Length: 263
Image 1 (cartoon, rainbow, N blue to C red):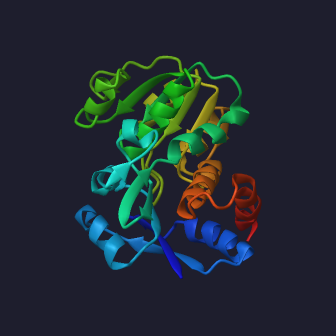
Image 2 (spheres, helix red, strand yellow):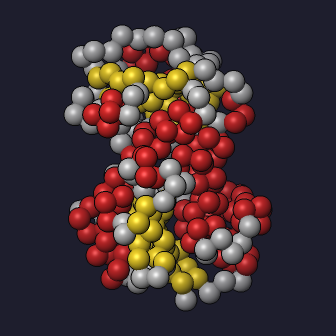
Image 3 (cartoon, rainbow, N blue to C red):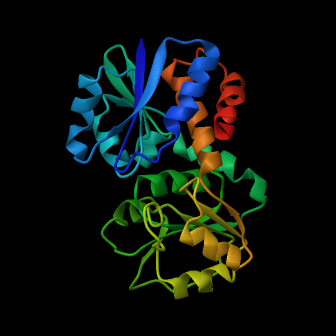
C-alpha cells in the first residue's frame, strides 16, 4: 500500500485527505492519505522516513523547512525556496511547489490584473509572488515586520513593513497569512485594509471553507472575492499527479477530485 500524508500545524482542518482519498477510491488504488500534526519543523524529514511515506503535502508553517530537507528540488520551487509537495523517488525526497500554478489557475476568473498586493511573507507568499511575477503582474509584498522580507527584496519585489508602508492602489489583495484560520484576526489593521480595499477590485484568501474576517471585510467593500478552495483543488490535482509519477492524467484526477467538495 502507498501511504501519503499532509504535514502542518495546525492540520486538523485540512480537507486534503478527502480530496486525495476520493481520487484513490475512484481509481481503485491501494493507497491512503492521512493527516500528520507536526509542531517541531526539525521533525519533518524524520517523520516522512519513519512513516515510510511515498509522498506528502506540506502546509503552514513548514513549507520553507520542507525545501531544506529535500534531496532534490524541481521546477519553480527552486526559485521560491518553499516546497508544498514531497515525493519519494528512488529512496530520495524530491520537492515541488504546486501552490504557484494552483494559485494562477484559481484567479483566472478574475480577468485582467495589472498589480497585486500580498499580505504576509511566508512560504505561500513566496509561491504567490513568483506565480504573479511569471504572469507579468506587478507584485508588492507587505509584512508587519521587516525580518522576513529579505528574500523578496533580493528577488526584486517591492516590499514594505508596517513602518514604511503607504497605501497605494492595487487590483488584487491576497491574504497569505494564517490570520482568520483559527481566530477572528485580520492580517493587518482594519483601517489600513479598508483604505486598500476601497481602491481594489479583487480579494483572495488562501484560507478555505470558512468566511474569514479578511474576506468578510472585502465583501463589505464590494470586492469580487475568492477563498482558497480552487487553489487547494488545483494544487492538489498537480500533487496527486506527482505522487503517482504522472501515471494518471490531469483531467482524470480533476474529474474525481472535484467531487470531494460536495461530499
